Every structure is written in C-alpha cells, then in structure tokens.
Image (tube, rainbow, N blue to C red; front, side):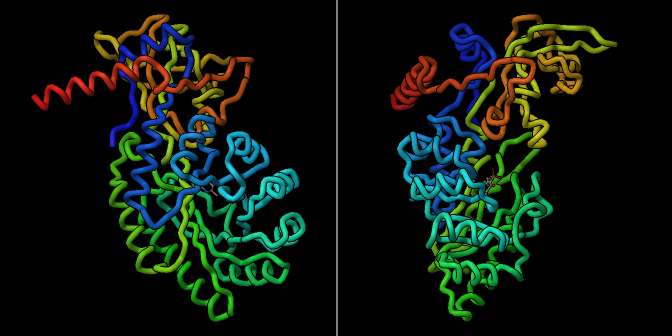
Length: 393
Ligand SMILES: *Cc1c(COP(=O)(O)O)cnc(C)c1O
C-alpha cells in the first residue's frame, strides 16, 4: 500500500488556491486502509478511534463504509450525532467517564462501555442502567511506541470480579477488552493478550457468566513510518488466525486510530523566514510544534519532510513560527537551499496531528482540504485512465 503523497506540482497548484499552512486529506486512502483491514482481519468489526482524526469528512467516509466508532467524551459523541451516526454504532471506550459523557451516552443511546475499576460501576449503573460493559485488562507490550497499560487496564486477576460486580449492579457483563499500546510493532503482544482473554472467557463461563464480545483495541502501526519495516497484512492475518483458533464463536472488535488515517494526510507549509546560525541555515515554517506538529511532543513522532529544488543538499534546521525556543521541528535535515515562499511537503500527517494543534501565539489552525474535491484529483484519475488505455492497446 502506498501512502498518500502529493506531487510537487500538485502541492504548488494547491498552494496557489489556498494560503499555507493547510492539510490535504485523501478519503480514497482512508477507504483503502479500512478495506485493507477488513480484508486481512475479517474477524474484527471496526470501531474507529476518532481521537486520532475527527475531520468530519473522514468520519462520514468511514460511517458510509460501515465502520463503528470509539468515543471518549460528550464532544466526540456530539460530532458523530450531528453526522447522523447513532449511539448503537459507538463504544464509549474511555475507562473513566465524566458526567457530561454519561449524559450524552444516555441521550444518544450509546449502549456499550468499557471500564477498568470498581469505582466506575455505580456511575454507569446510574446513568445507563442495563448497559453492555467490557472490562479492560492491562496487557504487556514493550514493542509499542506509546504505552497505554500503565494508566489503563485492570490487573487480569481482578477482571472477572469486576464483571460480576457490574452484573450485580444491573449492568450486562459482555466481555473483555485490551489495548496493546499505540504503534505496536509486535504481533506477539496481541497473541499473548488473546491467550489471557481466552482464559478469562473460560473462567467466566465456569462462574456462569457467558461473555460474547472481545475488543482487541487499537495499536496497529502506520506502516511506512521512517525506518520502520512492518508487514501489516501479515500482522493482521496472524492475529486473525489466532482469533479464529481461540474465539471461533465470539464477536470480535478492533479500535484502530492511527492506522486508519495516519497515511492519508499531507501538510503543505511555507518557508516564511531564513537565518544563518553557525554553519547551518535555519528555515522557519508557517506551521510548528504548537500546530499540526504537536505530535512531535504528544505522540513521540517525526513526520517525513520533503523539500524540493535542485541545488546541492546541506544540513539545515527547521523551526515553527511561534516565539518559543522549543518550536524546532527538524535538525540536520539534508535539503537544497530554500528561500522565503518555497513550499515544503510533510507526509503521514493524519493521526494525532491537527487534533492536538493549539492556537498558541494566536496562529490560526491549519484547515483540512479534501483531495478528492480538488481538480488535481480528477487530473490523477484521468492520467490513470490514459495509462490504462495505453496498457490495453
Ligand atoms: C487511542 C485509543 C485507540 C486508538 O489507538 P491507536 O493506537 O491510534 O490505534 C483505541 N482504543 C482506545 C480505548 C484508545 O484510547
């Protein structure tokens, strides 16, 4: 699968139409990612974790494809509600729910919840009596970029006791969930967690609790991230096989976030200033760490930067526009000489980027443009057709 990437020409013509900085999202790429997962991990229904990228057109595209959604707050539920997504297509997968979230869940008919502590049971029983609940267990994974098992997940030995207590409080004990951590490079972490879950399903049955649903969470990596060689198809197929073996009769779900949209968005940003500091040139861009590059801080991420031009490449430093010394994006990056007004392209900007951008220093948030709505998309389609015609001759 190729990541979505604008050509230099597309970037420049879009930049004549829209002032930089802006993001360009490809809905075709989102669809491709969704279908790829459905094909290689057919046993798992999809709850898209919308915190990764809640752009309305992305949500609409996924809803049209049949995706369900993982939500964590009243605000996320409201966005989906306005797009016509019903509560029955959502899982409230924030183990600790606030009052506004529970109220919204009740209002929109969200019926599926996760929790990882006893203190959550009375809250759910009061706000959404009879709700279907899955207990989140902590699992091990030292091969994830983002650890989600220190803050989240009940100890495995407490899981069934929690489900029993939920049942006693009038909730419906439905199943188990886990999250191996984000950008997980290991299939083993999923496989180990599946074995732990199987044992819990068996023990629950012995206790007279018939669990029906298993949620294996998110964590699937963005494949072509720099220096990363992961065979996503093989990873998904291995997990699917284990699900078939261990959970032949269970409804299984997954909650991909990063995977679904990480590769579907590009950022176009301009050089707005240059400086010479020591031997290296510095280039100041019109988007920075308080904007879409916030993932450098929050998500421990680096995004592939593409500079154009023909000159000899030398190492340079790139910074954002804010008046903070921390706003440095790339160091020792090899680039031809750039001048004010030149555009640069940043790929793999779809997950945990725009959503955590701020208006620090008063800079506006970069808007997201949908590639398929632009003439450059039609041009690409036409070029593809001409190529196909040529091949057919
Ligand atoms: C953030 C989150 C996800 C998505 O994680 P990715 O690593 O982006 O796939 C899924 N489930 C829950 C509960 C989350 O908090």
